[in-house]
Length: 507
Image (cartoon, rainbow, N blue to C red; front, side, top):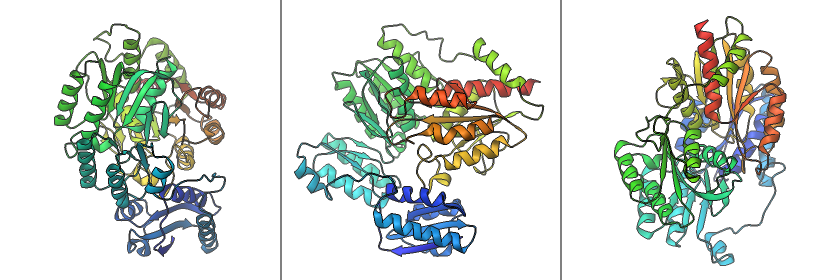
């Protein structure tokens, strides 16, 4: 393990993640992290096995580079490469664009601006957001590692001023048809979305668009918003805003289960906006016909309402249908006697949580996971045990690296490992398209899928639309040709994987 500290050198998180990705792909480098030396980042590096004594003594104003290298030569090459990329100010192939250097400069150039998208290191993001609120701007706070007390103070200030703070750690929004962060090219339409989950927002908005039902606004809140500590401030304000929005006819709410007092406030507010509201709180049992177990079910119910169809209160959960069960039997028949487990390698916590929910609803009670309600805890996210669901967007995997929706390197490595485990029957993947995501996922995945599918069943879902830069049908076709079983949603992929495992367990 080798590391280097540079004092007083600040770089934005996107630049650092791009540099770390380049270092990880160098010959002789097993792993790499390029981060500011904040307390949070040092803790994550320790959990990832990349914390050296030198990095442990760094501060938030220090740039820390840590590599796990085969030898001194490889480590030296990595440090030299990092110096070159940081001096250039971008990763190879990244386009430059003109931008203002200060908030004042941006407002002078475009005085009509009403939103600031902030992506700076967490300890500094609050001050930038506070300044934006003082200028009368709504805030999308992409940054993570923002202290809880800062989040609460910002959201209370925004509420009092009639503004929204989306985030921190808000990765996705669609405002007046404009996708921000990790978002997709979806059709304009009558559905407004409030989501305390970025990938959850993407899944439901894509499902709706693919069903011919568009989105008016999609507002992210950040995952902590629905806790008692924050009180659902942004969730409630966003719900009120959609209630007043003339272009929004139906509202869809997406979150992991809020804390009880926050859920009560959300449901009371939803009852008062005078519009139909569909709710999916992943991991919580539905309590009405407009509640759903899964993202796809919630989107399907929303689409039905938009077409004036009546919802059946008895359809909160449907067992695996005959067609999918027959498909699962065919897959199971190709496995040998030792293969019996599913290994779900998900790009984020929401899809991991949904996998746990679906597996539980199809009768799998022995699932281990590092995310999601209802699973046994996974002690080491780097090692699967039995039926395993891994959120590969967790801190242990993302420190100093791009999100797994961008950088597939760790998932490809894990896919190869799991497919060679004699007990693995199914590997489950999600593939997320859209702006900000990997520009060509099929090229990165198809060889690995082809290799893995010679030993196990590779089941995947694709979150995206035909208008996304990657083109959903093109990705589906290439992954199918490589041997993957491509399903229409994460829910369907999980149901197929779960059915295969249940059949194998019965034999």
